[in-house]
Image (cartoon, rainbow, N blue to C red):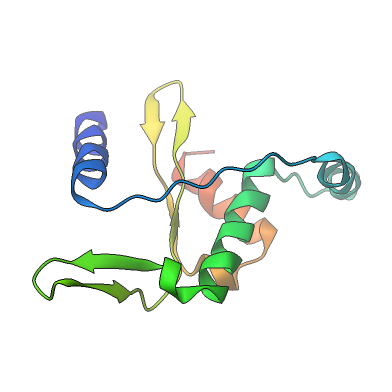
Length: 119
């Protein structure tokens, strides 16, 4: 299983155009919100918030939610917003896909990623 995942990740890296964006952010307000939500029973990771934010950004900027169609020689926009998450586990790297992530709330995203890694 891990060999297949590694092979697919390598293929993706070698065959698909990539765009990297980085930013420095202060997460003090996020930490406060997470603590508040945890006190009411909702355990959410920072990653859950990142997945949701990325999904909403891809929905709002559909040109960024595209793939290169070599046969057509052009970029084609995806119909939906799916977000793949790389998660390191004791058994190796797992990559659950959150389908239609832009339509899901934080709890649903957390549950789906958790289910994908066997939590």
